[in-house]
Length: 201
Image (cartoon, rainbow, N blue to C red; front, side):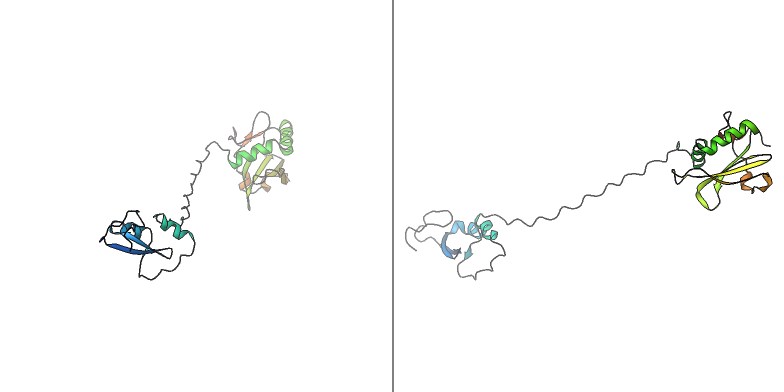
């Protein structure tokens, strides 16, 4: 080592008799003073005499070592944010029942207008509103007088399907027991209403 040798890390002139450490950096030997040994190791310099480590897979490793910085770890994929579960809306207590919907559709249909005309001629009828057997989305409406009766169906599962006629006859006794549960009536305008009829015949 020449008298004017300097430390490859701090650049200070190495004094005569001062202990010097030899390092290898980028294939070249570097003299490092006693005070800068730790810095040389942090820079990734290899002590002379040690075998050369395997080269990293990418060329960025050496630049990170020269800067004395820790190589950044690969970015982990962000954890998925928890899904927000919207609470179910409270049941609408004011929503119309299936029978109320069926009555409203019936009153606005051609069948409803037919009943209005019959009420003017024959007077107040018996009225039964109930579920149609074997069809959970259909409501059966029965309107009966002493000498005639009519039945219609309202499909509350299909708003576009018109009110349809199920059957008609002359004797009330022809109706099954469920159809004779008179649970509705007509208003002053002849339109059906779910209100209990004022009198049972």
